[in-house]
Image 1 (cartoon, rainbow, N blue to C red):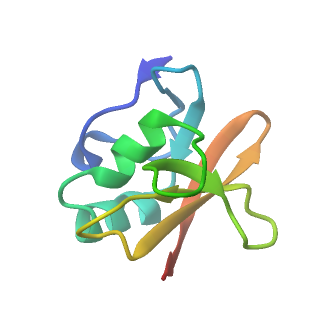
Image 2 (image 1 turned 90 degrees about the horizontal axis):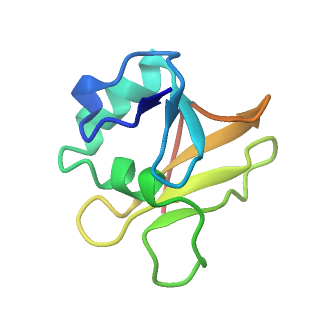
Length: 102
């Protein structure tokens, strides 16, 4: 398993990456493009790297309220109005490119 890169530009579509705490993640081409467009500071990648956190006041992964998605990335400050949603497929948290604004 490759470690999760620090930059969206370094991520390849549909490769399974492993975060520091052992979470397996993958990204569609659409998700990578959204990351490059909306997350220039790679805050959402840092949130995904951090893993599951308590929902209030934390940067990380929190439960998704969207049916058929499991977790979403949460960031604070600039860029914090978007959430990238992922679903767990065969043990891998896959980000297909579904984004919500808050």
